[in-house]
Length: 183
Image (cartoon, rainbow, N blue to C red; front, top):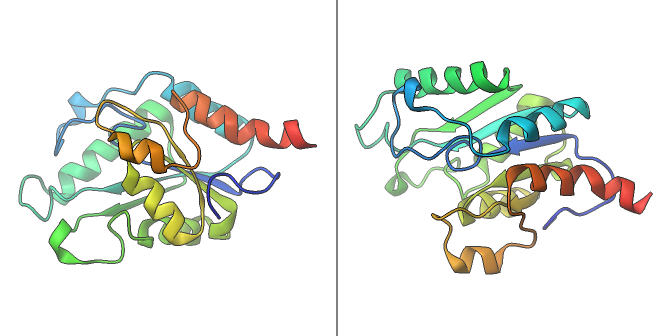
């Protein structure tokens, strides 16, 4: 599946953390630095109001690089849950880019893990993220995707994305409205 596929609501929406849900603070291990991205709180609330499970899929290579600990990542994730309400699943890759794991985006592992944790078919999920690795992971797993570009998003990543949206709320509206527009 590329883009959004089908006309049904997804069985789950999987969000990237840094740059998508919260401002990207490189290798953040401090919960006090967590700030929601514009429209992110509204976007997640809209998904939950539609009864769709949510998960976070996040690369955290700072652990492998020795720049932060798994405990610090967990404390930042807990702060995200405090701000947004608890996500149904958290799937985190703590490997570095040279580890050649199957979970580090753009590999499909985190998307597959999240779908399994939520008990849904991966083909019925949508990944929303801010960089090409998020879209790549969705494609590799067979999920839909929406790219929400930020200043960190490369022009080629925007060009390669099947679906883009200017804000996270716009992305969620695209996903939620596709059934209303085709029904």
